[in-house]
Amino acid sequence: MRGADSLCVLVVAETLQGKTTSPTCELLGLARCLADQAGGTVVAALLGSGGDAVAQELITRGADKVLVAEHALLGEYHADAWVPLIARICRQAACDAILLSHNAVGADLAPRLAFRLGTAVATGCVEVALSAGRFTLTRPCYGGNAREVVAFKTTPAIATVRPGCYDALAADASRSGTVEQVPPELDATAIRTRIVARKRDAADGMRLEDAKVIVAGGRGLNGADGFGVLAELARALGGAVGASRVPCDLGWCPRSWQIGLTGRTVTPELYIAVGISGAGHHMAGCGNARTIVAINTDPEAAIFREARYGVVGDFQQFIPAFVSEVQRLSG
Amino acid sequence: MRIVVCVKQVPNPEIAASQYRVDEQARTVAPVAGVQLVMSPFDEQAVEAALRIRDAQPGTTITVMSLGAESARNVIKHGLAMGADEGVLLADPAFAGSDGYTTALTLTAAIKKIGNVDLVLTGRQAADWDGGVVGAGIGELLGVPVVTFAKEVSVEAGVARVERVLDDGSEIVEAPLPVVVTVSNELGTPRVPSLRETMRAARKPVAAWSASDLGLAAAAVGAAGARRVLERMFIPVKQNRCEFIAGNSPAEQAVGLAQRLREAKLI
Image (cartoon, rainbow over all chains, first blue to last red; front, side):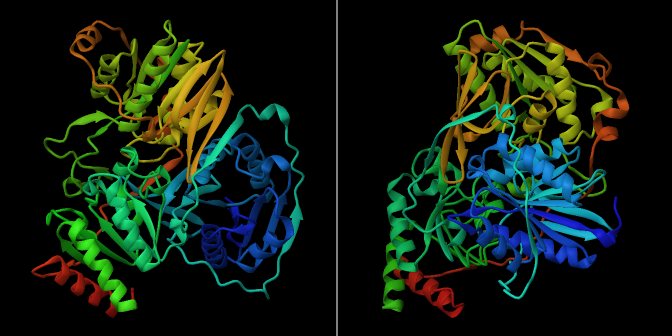
C-alpha cells in the first residue's frame, strides 16, 4: 500500500441528461471526506459525452482532477466498452479506492473491475471508512437482516455505495481542479457483446431517487388497482409511487418501481409503506428514509418495527380518508 | 450444448427477520433450530433458465454445480429433481471461508475441468452474502463475456440472447458462446420438482471434487486465498418506537396521522 500522503480516491461518475447524478455527487462528498483525512486527492472518471460542463460540475462537487474519455460508444453504459477503459484509468491514477453508485451500472461494473484489477469489491455499502490507511466497508447481507464489515488484503478497495448514505457537498464554484482527456483507445475485438435494443419505462412521474415523498405498495394491495389508490395519495403529497418486490413480480406495477435490495435505494423525507410486510430485503432499499409511516392490516407486521407512525387498518378505507384530510390541510 | 448452473446452499431466506441471530465471535449467522438450508432463490431461477433452454433445444446437458459443505448435496439433488442431468459437488475443508474471489476461482477451475461448456448460469447474487460478485468473476477468469441480471435467456446459432433488467427498463444483449449469464427474479417462478423427476434424480450422477482434483493448491482457495477479510458481523439495532394512530374510524385515524405529519413538517 502506498503512503497515506498520496492517498487517491477515484469516483466513477454517472450522468443523466447531461448532468451529474445526485448519487455521484454523494460519492464525491464521501471521497472528499476520505481524501481530506489523509491530505489526498479525489479523481473522477467521466466516460461518454457531455465533456467540459460536467467535468466542471464534478470539480465544484469535490473532485481535484477529472479524467474524461469521450467516444460515441461510451454514451450509455456498455460493460465491454467501459470495463477495460475504467480499469486502465484506475491503473494510471494508481488509486487506493474506487467508489461507484450501487445501481444497475455500478453493480454490473464493479465486480468485473475488481477481477480485472486483481482486487476485491464490496457491493451495496452503507458505510466506507478509512483508518490508518486501510478502508473498511459496511454492507447489509442476509437479505438486509445483518451487516458485515469487511476489509481487503488487496488494493485498490472497490465499493458500490447505496444512494442516500452520504451527503453531497454544496456546489462550490471557487473550487479548482484539472481536467484531462484520456484517449479511449477502444479495442473493437474487446467488444464481444452487442446491445440490440433498449427499452426505458415511460418516465411519467418523478424519479424515485429524487422524490421527497414516496408512497409504496406491497403484497397487501391485493392487485394492480391498489396502486391507483396510492397514486392519488402520491399526487396529493407531491410524491412518487414505489413498490416492494412482490407486486413487481406479479405484474401489478412496472418492475422499475421496485425498492429494495435488488431494486432501487431511496431516501425520501417521508416513506409511506402500504401493505408492505417490512422484510429485510425491502428495508435495505428504504430504511434510510427520514420518517416511515406504515399502513397494514396486521398489527404484528415487521414494518411497524421500522416505522415512526403506524396505522392498523384497511388501506382501501384509510387512504381515501387520508387524501381528503391532506387536501383539506393544504387547501 | 452444455450448460453449467452454479448454485449455492443458504439458510432459507424466507424466515422472519426476528429469527436471525449473529454469532459476533465467530462472525457468522448462527444456525437457528428449524431453519432449513435451501437453494438460493436466484440460483433456482438460473436452473429454471437452463431448463427452458433445454426445452427449446433437446440434446442440451445441464450440470448443477455447488461449492459448499457436504450438505450442499441436497441443493444439487434439488436441481436434479427440477430436471438437470448431472451434479458436481465441490467440497473440501480447504474451501471453507471462501470469499467472492476464491469462490469464482474454484468454480472456474471446475468449469474448465468439465470442458467445452457453452453457457454458465448463476443467480444474480446469493441470498446469504448478497454480493453479486461470483458470476462476473467466473466470466473474467474464463475470459468470456458476462451478461448480468437476466429476465430472459435464449440461445440460437451459437449466440446467447439475453434480456437484462436496468433500473428504468431493460435491454437485449447478444453474446457469442461461451458466455456467463446471471439471472434475476424477473425470469419468473421456477418449476417445482415432480414426483417422477425426483425419483429419477436419485439415479443421476453426482461427482465430488476436491481442491487437488481441480489442480488448486490449498493456499490458493478458501479463506487462505481470499482477498476479503470479514472484520465484524452484527444485527443492526433499531432504536425505533412506532406510535400507532388510534381512532374509531379510518377518518379519525386519517386526521390523527395528518396532524402528526403536519407537526413534523412532513406535509
